[in-house]
Length: 422
Image (tube, rainbow, N blue to C red; front, side, top):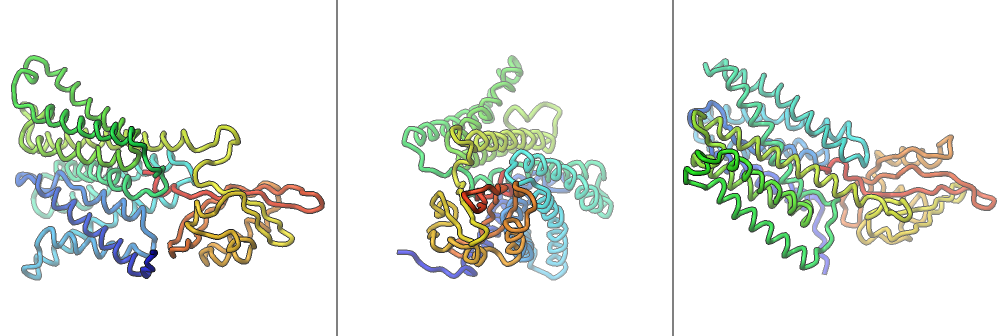
């Protein structure tokens, strides 16, 4: 039996869930806080925030910012007195613009259905915005508090970049609904479970290794062994998909940071401070996260086209539109895109446009009827599904052709996941 939960209540629950994930990621980060460092070296909340801003609607940004600020205050336990509360709120607000800007750049300049372009945008914007944020926020904090300015800026930059790369990759693996979510056969389930257990066992052995032989007699071998969990994590991402990659990366990250924090593992070298060792460990995890992201892109790109027809596979739906009558004919079942949508609900232009977001109706109408050439441009629009969720679709360049004595437009609708490629 289907329960009709109001959309506002669903959205509120999602926003609060984002706040909970942000809060827990902050608590986990604080477990590895170094009292000798001016700022937290391990800091995952920015990555959670970027994932939230990548996934949420624009109108939810103010609510997300408010929730994240309140979560930061709870993390700092800064409600005892007004000055402490205001300082915590101020620092929390200063963290938000960089996260919002990274997500805005990705969503604003990403090319439709070009996952690689999304990843490059995300990586480059993270580096640039994090550097500016470190110069302004961390540099300003170091100047006012008398901390070493260059060291504080560098630590802040690395903490932001590594936290975003790692946490955003983990979270987006669970959030991304446009990836392949088919039920896995039991062989792949067991194979993935074996890989996950192997990741746990091998990572614990390598990073929890307490003897001195590998460190002194075979240091090159010791470093080489640290690459094996990366290989297994990539294999898990291939076998279990997006969520499997996130699970493997999360498990790997927790074990690596735990043992590095205990002064164990290949990154705790002689003459290196704890901060430097943590930075090495975070760089190791960030590199793993980026490899998993590229595996996701590769995995989707290899199944994007039907090798027989060249049509987009998965959620693609082909249509024919008669401009003179405004009648639609759908080749595929629309429910693959719009849940339990009925063909009769979308058999005319008027009915289709009634489901389209008001801001996108005129754009879609001109896409069909005001094109001067036979090849129509690709257009992105939002449409409401039967569960009152706004979905982003791509109309992949319809073609006008002759059919007997009339003209028809042949086009394709496909789910747009360009803002969730990570």
